[in-house]
Structures are given as C-alpha cells and as structure tokens.
Length: 164
Image (cartoon, rainbow, N blue to C red):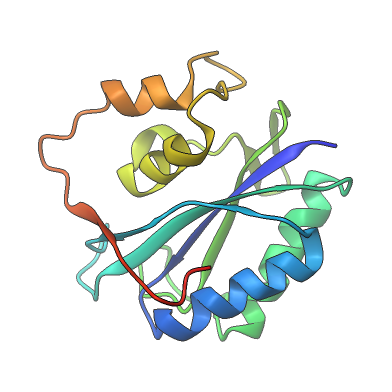
C-alpha cells in the first residue's frame, strides 16, 4: 500500500476544524502519523495566522479517490469552492505525495510543488518523513528542509492540547 501525505491548514476556527478533520481521517485511513502544528502567517493575502501540519497514512485507494475524499471533507467544514486561491480557510487539505507516484492531470498534481515552495509544507513533512525521497529529485525531505532558506521564516511550532 502506498504511503500518502496530506498537508492540513486552517485559519478559521482552527481549534475545531483540525481535530475534527484528524478524527475523520482516522476513520477513513486508520493509523496516522501526525506532525507537530506550525503557526505561520497567511501567504499571498492579509489574514489571520494559519495552523499547518502534515499527516501520513496508508491506503489502497487511488490518489484520485483520496483527493476526492479530501475535497468532501473540506466542503463538510464549510470550505467554499468559489473562494479565491489566497484566502482564509476553514480547512485546506492537499494530498501532496502518494507513494512514488507522479501525477499531473485533472487538477491533481503529485508531488505538489508546494513541498519546495512553502516552509509550512516542507517543515512538517521533513519532521515525519525526513528519510523519504522526493519522487522527482530523489532528495530526502530532511535534506530539502536542511537546505531551505530560512532567512525570513515566519513560522513556529505551537503546543495544543487538542492535536492527538
């Protein structure tokens, strides 16, 4: 079974949406590997800070089936499909990796280019999958994070009592 990784973000009622999302993902996929939560500034717009984390899971579903389930969960949490790309979110779920698959069709991109573009994706991924390798570059996520430019890094781990 492939190991998939889901990037989770929220900046609207995050203390409710993220734990509920994790419960739903556990019901769908069973055991999850869950990173710490990282608080970061909104990217591309002015808004409340986000809480971001990464979840690893195993599934025998196709990547397209998993992505469809993630869209359903977002909608159940009040996400609007008409919202602008850079805007506040009740819940943002992105399947960023699925085994060693490389997909770029029908709006599904795996691996997601956000892995190397945004610290709020790469740092929690490197935390739970440091030895895993990017399916295109072959570089481990731990090494990608180590080499990432952290000059203007505006994120930090946050402690919550609702994560696990």
